[in-house]
Image 1 (cartoon, one colour):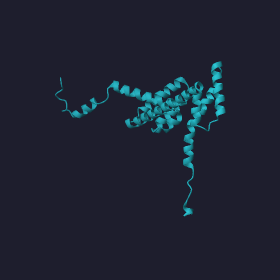
Image 2 (image 1 turned 30 degrees about the vertical axis):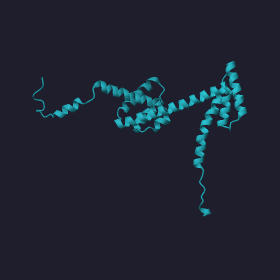
Image 3 (image 1 turned 180 degrees about the horizontal axis):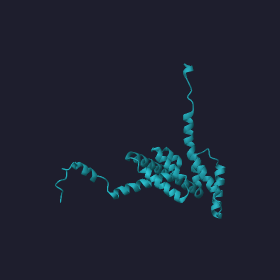
Image 4 (image 1 turned 90 degrees about the horizontal axis):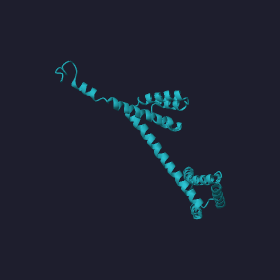
Length: 200
């Protein structure tokens, strides 16, 4: 039965409404667990990445310190402390961290896809001689004799179940090809522009 005196003893009804708008215990626990997991993701991330994340310095310091602890019990306590620090962040700070981590995942997926493409091309080089012809048409600067020798040796390694030395060298050559255009573009940007004012 409603209390007829409610609101008549110095309390405003909206104070009760505000109290009832607080998150439930289960919702608060879910949010706490989510922040704990977010902190653990940061602890597992490379240090150079963590250092670039926008967050309060005390939170960042707790994460970087936790990364250096190898003792099981010490790390468990450090992770709990990271979780405690994560719960001091406001919604905007949490969203910035989430977006940053999502960006890492996207970059990792792109890198993985690029590596898989290189692996597929290497397999084609070993399986089909036409694949080498196509590669040389795209990159005429390559040493054809070196590649033919590596391909021959890689096939031999597979047939005789030997360590994949040549197999890995082929992959490295293909990987380096992907880096060279970017390097060339960077060199072009750094090339000084000639001053033509003297010609006027």
